[in-house]
Image (cartoon, rainbow, N blue to C red; front, side):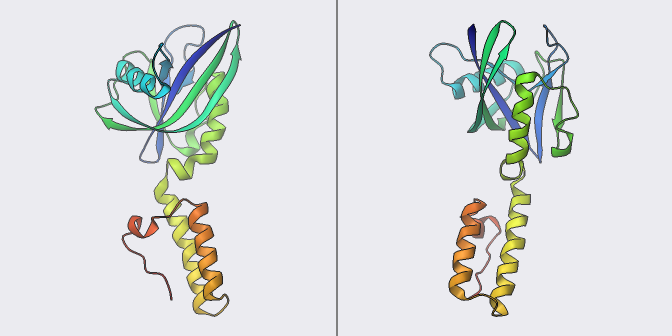
Length: 189
């Protein structure tokens, strides 16, 4: 079976992600994440930048790899590298797709996804708060830190327990630079 190597951009902005609707072929009217084929000599990231420029006229910043989706369609195997992306410059203008939508967390299943993209949606939902909505991740972190501060100030935990718990929380939530993000938070001593 022929293998088709492609890339997909999960473009995020304002707590939403961008999806496009196919306007052609066997899967017309189904929804997908924009992207396309990897050309010989291109890295997946280079292909993604080129494809988004060609299909949507915008420049993107390619971030972390989310997943590589492997899916068997009738007649070919799809291997799709999927990356978190943000807009670097330009407007998203449809040149090939039939329609597009910015989808919130609750709207992710409001469209009919292509089969290969459908499985990716579950991965996106699991990683949503860390990658799409970092401000809510910060809010959750700050609430947890406030609880630790309260426990420490009431003597429910020792300073050593506080430091260990705060370190674990900081690492788990990817908030190693939370003081900078939050505009300067002072640890309880």
